[in-house]
Length: 154
Image (cartoon, rainbow, N blue to C red; front, top):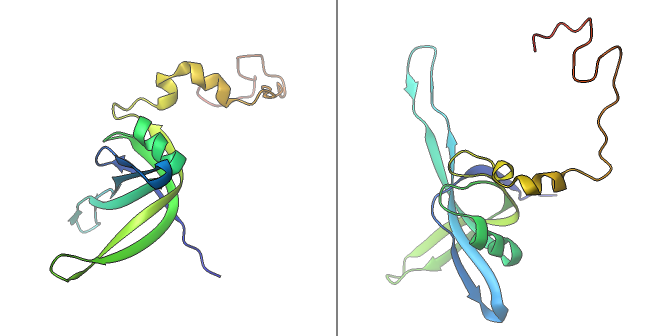
């Protein structure tokens, strides 16, 4: 058994390059940056941030979503497969590139820090299932208040 699955959360590095190829199939290519935060060791050594750049390839419907909504700076959640391909350049040198082929993509936020849901409040109620019910009122709590023995400060 083998598994080829990649999960990334990062920021788009450039606007997607979108093309329509034969039979009107859409493909989008863009880069995604993931950053491991730096830290200071116990001995005082500063370890800087480390950013990795990933080449992302989205096909068909996901490419169309990228074309409409993804821009430089957009924060994305990506699930996909890692693929490496090779070719010969004009000097007959073998070149390789590693790409992430997208299976699932979710827009997490906007460049200005606001979430997509916050900027589109009309879409928010649709996210809740129609059968959603508020939890029952446990113990001796008062609706909207705290129970008498609740020791939480908020």
